[in-house]
Image (cartoon, rainbow, N blue to C red; front, side, top):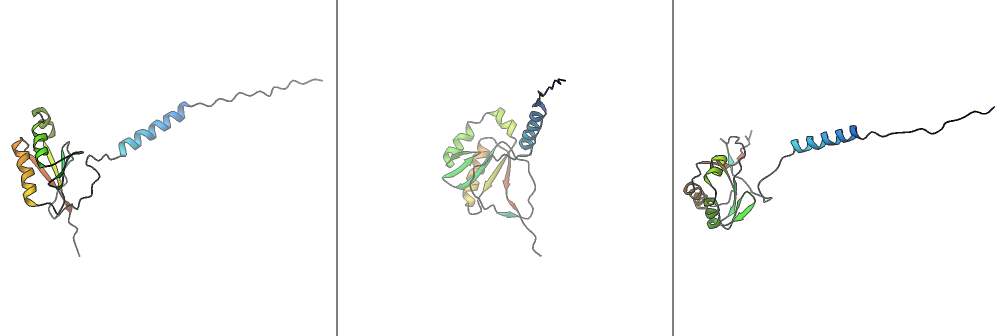
Length: 138
């Protein structure tokens, strides 16, 4: 007697569920990631007991010194900042609404006033100063 054996088995790997899982992981990490607009410079922000949470805006000014001022990621001095703020159109100003200023604790008061003046001269009205929350001791 002769038996016929069929040993050929066909296996199939379905990649569609794997692609779905990878896509969902990608979307999860994109949504849960935080993107930072400011450059990677270290600032020691001044403390404030009355600080409030403010939503981030499209325009962040980071002040390190008179010759090192960042408008989002672009570096300027005080004159260059004033020129760049003047180049922003009225439509963009309406979209921005508020400006966040991050200043190192050692930045002079007169430099902060110069930056505030540059913002006012160029038509920006809503300005927020970024600070650290003061921890209560006790």
